[in-house]
Image (cartoon, rainbow, N blue to C red; front, side, top):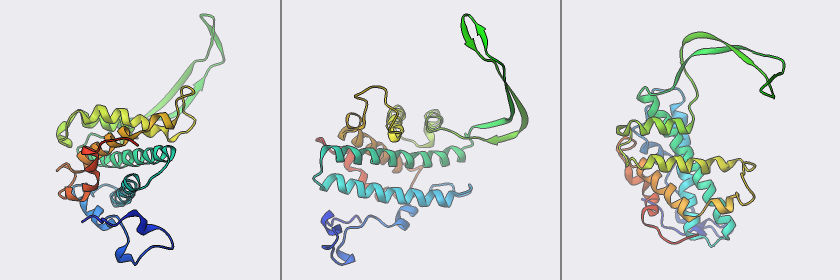
Length: 237
């Protein structure tokens, strides 16, 4: 099912015919793998397409990481991209699952205006007082963070039917995704090179494989076999 052709078949000027060139599973194949996705929601078709594009990209990243001899820094940056893409896939899936089960966060108020007082001295500190006025409305869905989505599923283990230890691990890995913001560093050595390594990639890939092959997500777990290497891989980058 998966192409075993080497990465070198992609080198410009040396590429063979299309039939002898490495290529990930087709977009249509990956789309068909997400057959448990609830397609009744708005933009569900766009979500399925984006999931398929991301899976092709992850398959390409696995190919790069396994076959290319690259510098430590480039390896780290590829792992960073891998984690960010994988977490985006899970966020999309989780959104659909949470909506399908009626667990989405709702609100029944809309902010109309905010009033702010002049500075006041309170206990020797300069303070302000803010007052907010809301209108009561019919309940409507509001934005949910990835952390909130993980918590919802952690409270309903039957939704994915995966090992419950996946959820605390996802909370840790979620912080790596936030490193897309290059300026969010807490101290001088808090940089990407010290954050991303082989173990992070292996854990992310293993969790992604477990979730994507869940019977609550797909009837075609074989389409995600390229991720299985993360369950048994050893070594370091």
